[in-house]
Every structure is written in structure tokens, then in C-alpha cells.
Amino acid sequence: MNYTLSTTTIDPAVSDLNTARMGIQRFGQPILLTLGMIGCILNIAIFLRPTMRTNSCAIYFHASSWANLFCLTWGLFISMLAFFMNNNPLTYNSAYCKIRYYILTGSQLASRACVVLACLDRFLLCSQSIQQRSFCRANVAFKVMLITVAGCACLSTYVLVVYDAFPQARQCTTSSAAGKIIDTTVLFLFNFGTPAVLMSTLTGLIIWRLKQNGKRIGGRKIHVRHRDLQLAAMLIGQVVLYIVTALPFVSTFIYMTITQYDPPASKSAYRNAAESLALTATGSFGTFIFNALTFYVYTLTAPSFRRELFALIIPKRWINQMHLREQTQITRTNRIRPSLRD
Image (cartoon, helix red, strand yellow):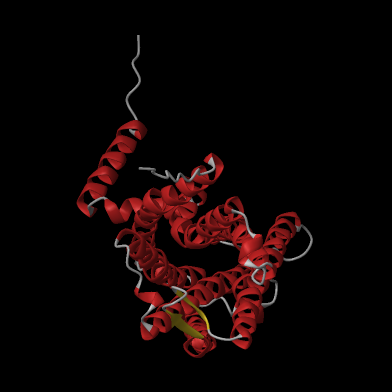
């Protein structure tokens, strides 16, 4: 009796790529989600404090923190559920597919837009024009923020039309070539291209104006509070984080768009594994790094933000006791003692 033994040899390189992709999903995403959720909640709590609520730039940061929280919930958390439960409703539930990508797209647009508005706010604050500096008021910032969020919500409505679930292909994606063009255009114009250009330009102008203001001798020098300078530092750090984390995703998206019509038979197992790893690393993981790590950028760049965090976490009576001890120590140090005579 003859037996035929069939064996399949898996390329070690392909196995390593698949292991790396699953490692990102199994360990990287939960860690990033935990750090991000904690950071967003602390951001919101800090920007709600009385000392922050009256600052126009902090209002934009506050709105951006809410948008980042929605991005992590409807983006990273949903992706994690699909992986760990081995069941992705996005691929067969059309309503769920549309709603998820609508909220995610609107939240990402709002998050970027609020950072751009914060850049504009800091740029105008350093202006010699009183009219331009009048834009940097809390009531103006609140109205502009509401209009911007409403605009992002309206712009994202195309998702409800062009996205759909495809059970056979196990995908939630655009349903037509025209929808693909619209989705790609919105991604490059409003989710990366325009925000990146505006953030970079305004950040450069902020630094230039701050330097010019510091060198101004004969002309009138604009007084910028120390807290406002630290908010500018927080903003610059956030812009750098955005550009560094967005470039890999956009590069991968361009590559996938160009090669989407390549015949499947022309792709090797190694190429398929490499593309899957790149999509996971830059898409379902890398694109949410900006949303998750803003709190840590704020903490590293601004002492005033760290003080607000300290005041939020430490009970008020402990802080009062510490201040009382400091005052007592200063009083004892400055007390005039009688001199000793021989």
C-alpha cells in the first residue's frame, strides 16, 4: 500500500514577517491603546482646569484630545477586537462599516484641524497687530473650534456613500472607482497634505516671530507670557510627532494604490507578507501613534503642563501643606538674627 506524503515548506523570511505582524497586533496595539487612552483622559482633565480653560490655544488642544480619544476608540480598539475575537463585523455588516469609518475619518480630520488652528493661534499671538491678536481669545477660539468640528463632520459624510462591506472579499472599503478617488483625495488633501504643509509653515513662522520679538530693540516688543511660550513648545513637539508618524503611512498608501491592480499571481509569498506587515505597522498601528502620544509630548516639552498634571493628581490639601512648609522655611531663612558680640 503506497502513501503519498505532501509537505509544504514555508520560507523562514515569510514566517518572520508574519510573526512580526502578529506581534504588533498582539502586543503593540494593546500597549499603544493603553498609553493613548490614559494620555487622552489626562489631557482632557488638565485642559478643563480653570488655568487652561481661558487660553485659546489650550481650547484647541482640548478639542484635539477629544478627537484623538474617538480615533483610538473607533480605530485602534475596533481593530484589536477584530484580531483577538477572530471576528470582524466590518466585513459583513454594512451599517457598522459605514459608521465606523465615518466617525474615524471625521475624528482624524478634526484632530489635525485643531492642531492647525493652534498653530495659527500661536502665530497670531506674536503679531504686532492688535486685530490679529484679537483672534487669540477664548470665546473666539471656542466658536472657531465648533465651526471646524462641524465642517469635519460634514466633509466626512462621503464615507457613508462610498464605503460598504464586502463579505466575500472580507473587506470594508470603497465600493467603486469614483469612491476610491474621492477617498484618496480627502486623505491626501485634508488628512495629510494640507495639515502637514500648514503645520510646518506656521511652526516655522512662529519660531521666526519669537526670534524677531526677542531681538527687537528699537521697535515695540510684544510681551508673550511664559505659559504661552510653553504652549508654543508643546505645539511644535506635536507637529514634529505628526509629520514623523504620518509619512510612513502615506508612503505605504501610495505604494498600495499604485500596485492595487497587479495580478495576485505575480506576487510572491514574501511580497504578500511584507505588504501585510507594512499595512499593519503603518496603518492599524502607526497611524494612531500621533493620537496616542500627544500627552507625553506635552509632558516632556512644557513645565507648566507638568505642574498642572501634578496639581491634578496630588490632593489639594497635600499641595497646601507643601506650600506652607516652603513658606515656613523661607521665613526662617530670612529671619534677622541678632549678631553675637565678643
